[in-house]
Length: 301
Ligand code: COA
Ligand code: ZN
Image (cartoon, rainbow, N blue to C red; front, side, top):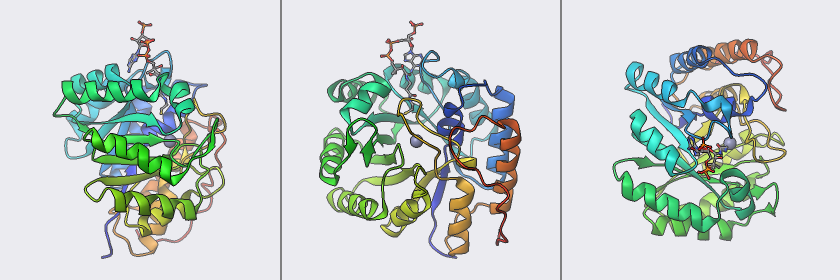
């Protein structure tokens, strides 16, 4: 068996949050989650604790978290939190791990969480001081490019991660929020991060705007990154990043890794069935992303 890669499913957050024209019933979200877990997914971002005014789709966050903790205590479940209030609600719901989000680009940070960098850092410090037992996996959004400021440099990314590392953060999810990274940039970025912060853990979160999702995620794996975030059916997109399209789809990533001999522990055929079922439920409401569910290919798992 080849090297293990943890494919982390984040569709129930990054995917569902992009659906604004219908409220997906909680029961349906849970059915989709069950199908994802049945395929072998072991780590799941199940929701986000955000303002229901900002993202009404996530207003059932506490119910989803409670379900996961009760029914699937063996699954590593976490949620995105944009601020202190979100972290508090997540901790009260019983979650042991959250993903605070701060954008490398100051303008996207302002647009997304309505805070300056300093305000976000101060709020993160407050979260760390108040909930020292809460595991933090920090989302560095717009790490490769920003809808307002354009291309982000690797040196800016390393400086930014350095500030957070100084604060004590050791887990970073490096996000291509609008899908503008390219393989050489991904290699340069992860190479620099792994060299500068050998005691930190990094994962990759790549959107698929230019069909670079699979290339960029593979590049990250080749750099030594063993945790990759994807969404079932490639559903996704940040509502506060103009032009953001879907994520790399979990089934495409799992298919490639399985075929290449990596150990994902996830069944491609079960995932594909889950993606097809999801399309039926959310038919017509996919935002921008192609979902090629007919492209079934013989596979191992
Ligand atoms: N969970 C639930 N409610 C929240 C909340 C959270 N994490 N953060 C803020 N709120 C509520 C407040 O209680 C307040 O409600 P009220 O009007 O009924 O009193 C309202 O939202 C506004 O609060 P305010 O203090 O002005 O907002 P804030 O500055 O603390 O929060 C954001 C602003 C950006 C955090 C909020 O708009 C948000 O959650 N945005 C979503 C960001 C996101 O998910 N982006 C995509 C993923 S990267
Ligand atoms: Zn995303």
